Every structure is written in C-alpha cells, then in structure tokens.
Length: 288
Image (cartoon, rainbow, N blue to C red; front, side, top):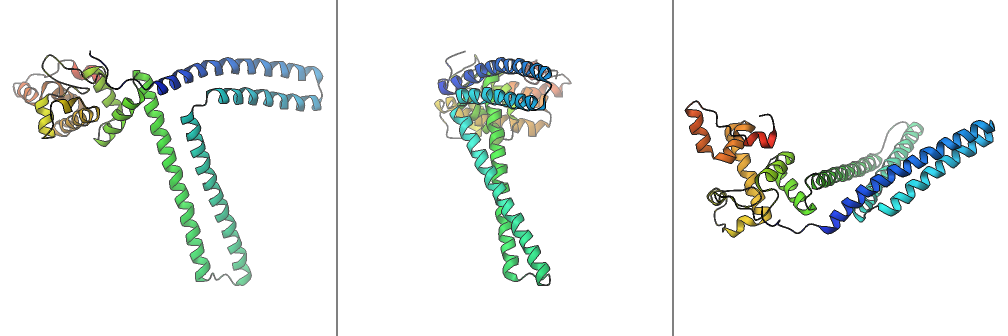
C-alpha cells in the first residue's frame, strides 16, 4: 500500500465523527426522557385529576421537544441544515401551489354551477397553467428526494470504508455513469488497491482500479502513464473495462475473473474445459 490519494476531507470526517457522538448522546438523552416520562405518568396516577393529566402531557411534550431541540442545535451540520432548508422550501412551495389549485378549482366549480356549467376558454387556460405549475413543483420535490438519497448513500459508503467523502462521491457517481452498481464498484476498489491512488502491483497494474497500462491506453488513446494515477481517469477506465467484460460474458463471476486475469486467459482455460476461478470473484462478491 502506498500513500492515499486525496488527503482526507477533514471537515467531512469531523462531521461523521460528530454524527456518531451525537447518536450516542441522543440515545442517552432519550433514556433520560423516558425516565422523566415515567415519573410524570406516576405523578399523574397519584393525582387522579384530569387537569393534572393534561398538565403532565404538556410537560412530557415540552421535555421531549427540549431534548430534541437541544440536540439539533448542537449537532446539525451545515450540509444537513442546507438539505433541511431545501426540502422545507420545496415542500412549502408544493403545498402552497396545491392549495391554490384546489381553491381555484373549487371556485370554478361554483362559478360553473351558477353560470350553466360552461367554462370559457380563458378559464380553461388558467386551469391548465395552474396544473402545469403544480406539476413543476412535484418535479422539484422529486429532484430533492433523489439528491437526498444520493447524499445518504455517499455518506454511508464513506463511513463504511473509512474513506474521504470526495473519493466516495467520485466512486459512486462515476460507477453510475459507467453503468456499474456502486456497491460492486466500492468492493472492486477496496480489493484492488485498498483505496490507494498510487498503488502499483508487481505486474505493473496501477491506481485505484489496478488497470494495466496497455488496457487503459486501448480504452482511451492519448493518455500518458501519469494520467493513470488521476483519480477520475483511473476510476472511469476501470469501471468501463469491467462493464465491457460484463457485456462480453453476461456473467458477473466470469466478468470479474476476466478483469483480474485477462479475457484471453479466461477463454483459454474454458476452451480446455477448466475453471478459471482463482478466488478473485469470491473476494469481491462472495460465494461465487
């Protein structure tokens, strides 16, 4: 293993560490809240009075909200705050647009009932415009949902493999662009290089995905040897080569073996009736 490419994103690592600490503190505070609620319920049973029960519920809610608000104020990161604001703005705009459309349509129904049920061309056009606005809001909400899901996945991969968030983002996004399942892409890079940018094998394979220079130059003519250590270039060509092997063999196990041993070697062993398996595919996907 050599030095890791891309110094760790210290801000991201500190946020992940803070989230882990926050989880532990939140669990402790939730336990305290549960004990407090139990004491409140015990007090209400002793009082046997509706007014006391109502006051107990209010106190219970205030205690829980106080704990939640205190935790959020202490541990909400700038990224999570921004995502929350984006989500709330999009949701509020959508709800407002939907409410306006509902009120407008209701008004049209009343007007139609009073005026013989015929809508003028102008009113029908206004309905269409309002529906288009609501559909646009729905599209915005869906984009926000997709971005939130993407960021959650990247954060999970970054924490699982203990790698910087910028590297996790590159592996995730480039894998999708090249038609590779991100989960498979992360395991490939882990097995091939241990997430080390300048890794070089005894046979000369280089970078995150341990591409042989001849293979890389065939995929993208004009590259230099040093280009193969560029993060995005190495990931892009490695995932593209794996996709080509998947298209060639139509089988994940054989594709991985061809990626590792070379398609010529795999084909030669199979022609002789042998099994090209060497444990490599099992190390990545397990049980195959």
